[in-house]
Image (cartoon, rainbow, N blue to C red; front, side, top):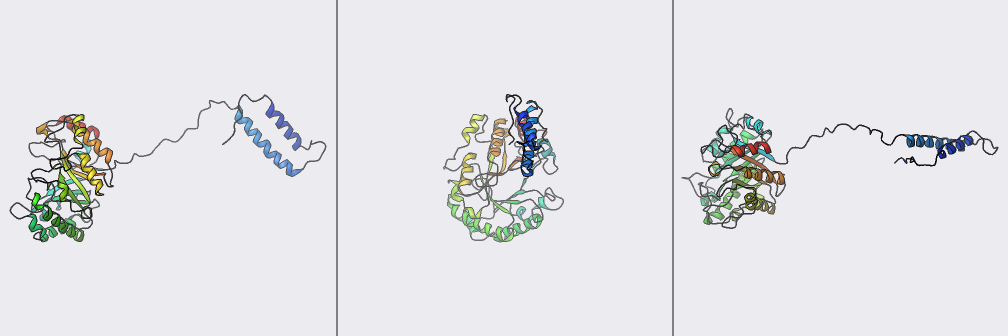
Length: 368
């Protein structure tokens, strides 16, 4: 660092030292002739003194050197943000919210659909979709089965065919395929609902599906996805968990319902909720369980519920949760997909000319 001589130095001191150095360098040194090595060193000293004097005499308030403009590009958000339904594939949804859709979701949750995978075929909705895709694969249909049969291998052939077709349709796509097998199994509305007596068979059947997935389509990620809370099953859904080695992503479908939250205070209070059997219900509880088993968390379906009100506070709470916990490590939010499907009398859609949640839609558009 250059030492600067202050403006309050004794006047003339630098000049007398400079004169003396010049005299010595000229050979006026008590009558002796010049000694060249010494003269060289003195010359360097003279140069340093001259520079020092010049710097000292410059004004203190001179303009700083202009720095180049900051051209750093802000990194993308640390989680995959997506939507399913209206305007997703054609890009309208992304343009509306001001952020491209980075992942989407689809469903093939009956015996025929999981094999045919119509929406992934050329020319269909996701025929050209190269981005990450979450696909919900049903375990078995209403008239065809039980978890006991599944644990015994009764559906292995169909599951293998489904995975084979899925691999062939998605293998060349750069985006990851997330297979959400038997999703919301802790609710009582699907054929593959798991009741208390089914827990062991379910875990065994899940491991069979995992073995097939690792053999047939190892590039895919297997997602264990529950409903926000258990409904009518009689057990804590954590008892169904087959072990972290058989799962790639833990997930929860999360809707603002039963009861809905309408204020920031209600949202904050809901984060640590548990269901009637002690299982995770609030998002913080789901995240904590994911961290405890060493897995990332996803929210493959989420939205407000127009039948129960228009709640910007719910949208703000969801965004804050995603933004706070986004990431791909254990106990972090890997991806989320807003359920913008046009169904149930527009009960869930935000991007829709006839949305029944205009305040929520405005909040979503502003935050994303």
